[in-house]
Length: 442
Image 1 (cartoon, helix red, strand yellow):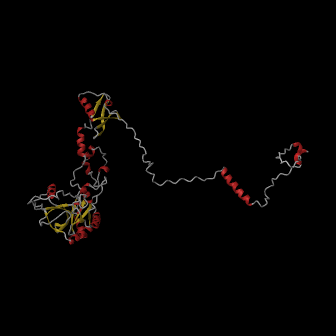
Image 2 (tube, helix red, strand yellow):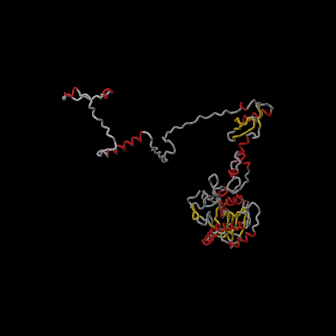
Image 3 (spheres, helix red, strand yellow):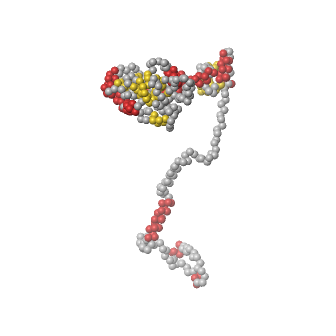
């Protein structure tokens, strides 16, 4: 998490922090220790502790003695003693907490081997330091090419320049011992600087480089974890985790350090559990354990002749059956002790807010257009009739010579109407004239 009150320059030095480098978000420095004694004054006549903790690249920390009695605070850039020349680092801790950290790391505060702080870094020192830091990345690429050319089974993971630019330390990882004497000569000739090779483990490499773990947070080894304890697969077995190396391994390829975090809690919970290899003797047959729930205190047993059906028992019931078996008494069956699993009723939630679905804001799907295929039935006939009507409407005035005349000729043999003389009456509708065969003959 980035701290809003501080920002770092290109060389890694903080431009300015309102908390004087004591921010608890761990963005000013890696592996920062919160100075909870900073607001407490020393007793009368007590001199402050004369050692300080200085951080260099990627969390490397060393202790130095303030022989010049400089007024140092967290975040100050100082020039420290090195071999040869001097190095540039950032003060990360001062005061009595440094004494506690030295005791934790096994460093004697009164030893004469503790190096000294020369001075506060000047602008010239910071410029030389920044230029040396800019050379590290392209130099690392070239160094890997030289190592591959000599076919050495090693991986150069990081390069750290000394503050005055007089020496470069190459950090590498390798499975076996590597003879890199010729490689050092190539490095000295290529880079024109003093070269120092330092082998680190895979976990130390991950701590220096940093990264994001499978939990979505920064690696513990690069933020706060300083001691690497051994992790065994038994830690995963006690926590009932699947022994899948892809899930149990971290960025370094080793077992995750976080497997040890909750191991003590699981070990305490397993104290009241019978052994997983416990066998229960019943009249229906022997039963062995198949599964156990540590925090609910439940165990599942199945008969050796029927592994498909599991019976859930509490720890108290299992211990009771074991006590009976020790007295050479057989229990009738596991069903007498098994817990009945009651299925909870399904909860139906009402749509109180009137929200139909989560996809109600999505764009509606386009409706498919109806298939406009011509049917062989009436629609085509209607369209054809309409076309014929349009054609006929344009040809009303033209004589139609092709079509025969369908007008019926008047029938001369028809009888005259008897009421034809009465012109005042309206004419009655004409009846159809029926012509018989005899009339046609006449």
